[in-house]
Length: 142
Image (tube, rainbow, N blue to C red; front, side, top):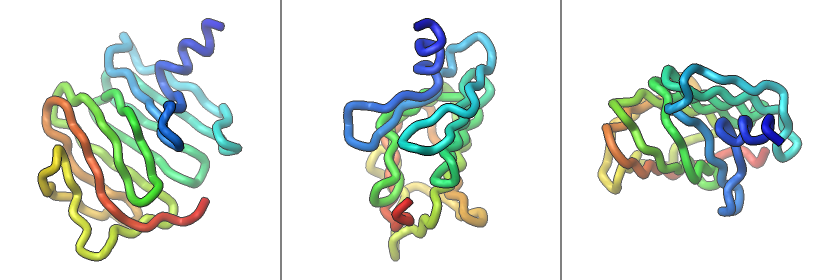
């Protein structure tokens, strides 16, 4: 049972349909779990003070530096999640087939925020404190 408790610190489904939670910046050191399966896809999750990183097959990936705890992460009709940032945090998210909706605005705590697209990755910076982030867009059906 203890190995599963450790995994839950890094990645776990939430009660909200399709949502997941991951990351724990309060771990003493970086921790990584590789090659576990979620919804038929191979997952790798890393958490700790330096970074939070999750790769879910070829469907999506998330990277935050420094590490933070992410809750309610979904990629259904764009990207949405909540987090608690201890300091300004750089985020990079790739979702297979993601295209921001025409005129899409990244909302952080309900306010329009700057973002860039670096290839297929959505990149932005979170402010310190409690954060709700959302951007509407299309994703591929996988």
